[in-house]
Amino acid sequence: MVNLKYKKIIILIPVILLIIFSIFAFFKFNQTKIHPFPKITPDSDNSINIVFTTDKEYSPYLKVALKSLILNKNKDSIYNIYILCIDLNKKTQQELKQFEQDKVKINTVALKKGMLSDKIKTKVNIHYVSKADLFKIFIPEMFQNFDKILYLDSDILVLGDLSSLYNTDIQDKYIAAVKRYDFSPKLKKEIFNCGVMLYNNKKWQEDNISQKIVNTINENKKNTTITQYPFNKVIKKKGVKLISPLYNNIVLPEADFSLSLYKKNYSPFCDTIKDYNDLKNKTIIVHFAGIQKPWYNPDMEFASLWWQYAHLINPDWKVEKRNIFKHALNSFAIVVKFMENKNFSDYIKNFYKTFKTS
Image (cartoon, rainbow, N blue to C red; front, side):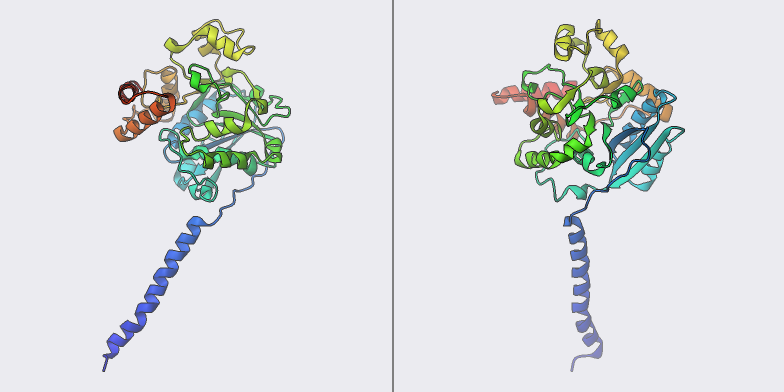
């Protein structure tokens, strides 16, 4: 006869297995189910509405962007800032809200990367851009009750008031943005940069642009620029209101700067630019796009200015050391992106050069 003690254990085994299976199924379901994006309602009709996306990695650099934005705004301008916090803990969200002051409201919106699981099917092949970047695709959906909203990347400095940018007449375009500086023949099709964009929310939604961009990402197996390529492929030149590059001055070494080429690319916006220093002095938004960042490289253009704002937040902030493995992946992504029809030795040489100098 089976011992009563063992009988109880035998009876409990299926119960325990059922509980374990139920817990597993619950978490599996919550990972794969569709997570709707929140719908955000405007607080004021006369404010400049700005949105950032950030995560744990980029939240320290967003603080620098916020510090520069607030210190350089006009005293009468009202900023309503929305920060889409991707898998960000409450402590960090609260730290971001502490930048709030008179005429600057900070709204944190908690989001999770899992919200993209039913939308983005392709693994995005990039390492030096935050995955939070993907959420900019859906900003007009979340802010559908706004006529327009200004999106800004976290790796920027804002050196002037944003009223004139926000009040740009978008007309019947999907966005207002800055044309990308054409220093590589391969970039000719990428006519605008996605780091600073003024969305025409209603027009965007009328033509279902978010879904078209998602389709482009899912169809492109070699996407190495996250939103840069699909935004440009879907929206194209006719859907963009081009604005002055002073609103999105992508950091370019002076050695790579050509005044004639710059004016050719940005005519008629830069007729008053006399030289490289004049461009630097008139810049409203500095954008540290690409693999080089001032927190890694204090000698790059505009880096000393970035560190001035960083030390206002934390006087003890030091230059960060790159993760070697991650830096190698970054360098590889850059080489693959910009090289075509080269042999193996050319790839090795360019990889070494990129790894050493970036």
